[in-house]
Length: 212
Image (cartoon, rainbow, N blue to C red):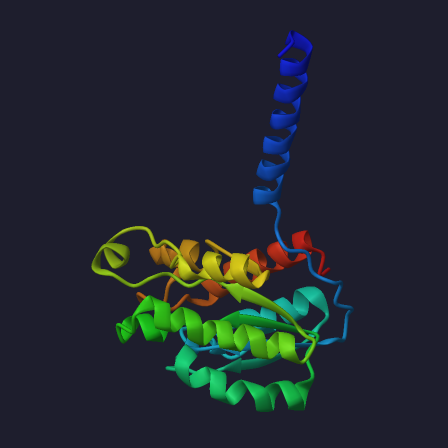
């Protein structure tokens, strides 16, 4: 093999590696969602706004920032296993352009194995896709003794689902809020300032992805 051939081969290999690295850094893009569009915030008590007053929940704050008509479909205590059964009626009723999914924390508290939680959330994502809406996941911390006592980190199933289902995952937003006691009403719920931080983080990620 000549020196020229070796050089060309190395350049081609380098280019391939750069493409692969670039692909790893890409995040799913969203179609723009116009002001006034119907958006569903689907989740549990953290979507509902437990720990703050009415109107201080992150869906309401996000609606103010975006101009979207956001329906707060958060139910305290809900699990991914339960939530997947109530979603179809909401999708048919509200016909959202976008569904922001924040679910799984109660499953973790009940010690449901993460692979089971992952498959329940996958069914939620697929139901959203099935009606032609865009799905976005808000990652939830995994609950463990270490995670309660130290800074919170997202459960890995969310990034896994993001890659497998091709959906945007908004990571280290909820976890970051719960890692700062001054932003929390208790160990698992933000306070009003914490929900404002969540709304800001979700807004920033949606804007970066092209929804705004």
